[in-house]
Image 1 (cartoon, helix red, strand yellow):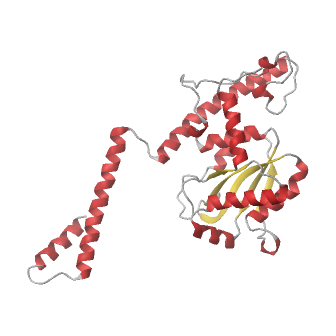
Image 2: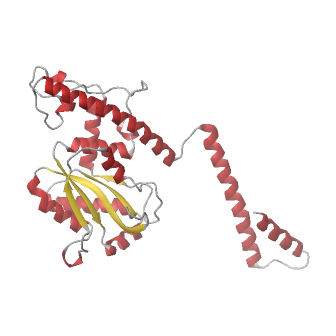
Image 3: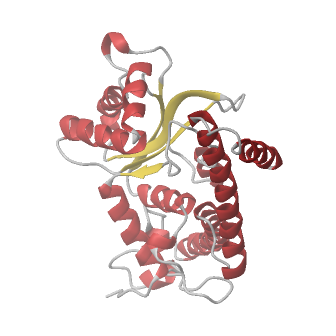
Length: 301
């Protein structure tokens, strides 16, 4: 800042003898712009400090910390439901720890849900106010109604270069997966993914890749699901790069899995937007309904 001012001062003194050239004027304008941006940045920082408003990144961090506490409470209630199933000699079926079992006289006793309040006494947040981390946790819980096929897939270099030019890699990849699902399955399907562009070992920038999962209504769908995933990322036929697609059936719901998906979500990548999570419409609707059922009063009859 001081060097800009010194250069301006010399040019102003020089104006007494000669008119300024275009380069001098451009340099003066740039120095003035730097000072203006610096001032606006300081004002913006002071505004957030005085009003208590959080930046988008700060708000998401706060939501994630809150949601970790909510999920811890959810896991405790799941353990209670499991013990209640055992007490009534009932096997645990998909989602029965959350809903009980229809037609059983002790159905309500099988599940302590819904959980209506947080540990601090506040009501549970609405779906839109959940962190991206919590939305994936809810999606994996809900996905246990079927079989979840997890995938780690690398975008083909040619496709990556093409999508980066659009400025919306995440959105375009969601469209491509939706399109290939419709072609392969004849109908939409529940899926989510987190896109990232850093190596998990070295932490340095690398080719863009997706970590996510898709609901399989039957495990016999494995081959078709893997095939459409390859096509969606441009890794099919002669274009396929070796070891670019990995799939595995989801077995155990763990916080570590979701933490792994978001490990680089906060890291800057010029190829990507700030938001890294994408969900299909069927997955969003199903997970949102499930969250409402386990966090709001509901009619059991």
